[in-house]
Length: 134
Image 1 (cartoon, rainbow, N blue to C red):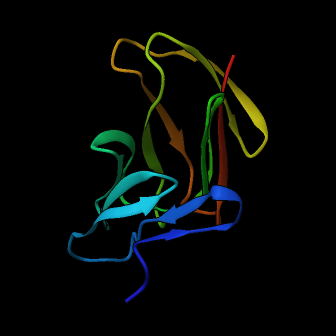
Image 2 (tube, rainbow, N blue to C red):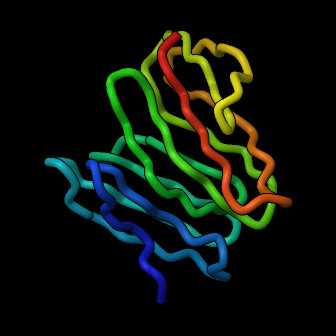
């Protein structure tokens, strides 16, 4: 079985497996003083940090080079279908979204701090997503 949650160089993590037919999870994964939890399979991939929402994709995805900073989140995502990704960010903040280095515009988060982005994965190996404070 492939790993569901792993550490990478530079404080980054990877997680998710969109090929699984049934939901699998890893809980209490220690990373830089935090506890991570991932649930993943073909229909959804979800990441939590210390019990708080951080990432969700529908359908499921595989994420690499995931890095959360004060200025935002960046990662590379792959999957066998286009995906809707929701990120847990700062509340009532303006963020600019970049897909493969191209700006798709700025989005304001609400009180929940959630931001959604659609990525086209069906005909590509991997998409780079960066979300930065505007």
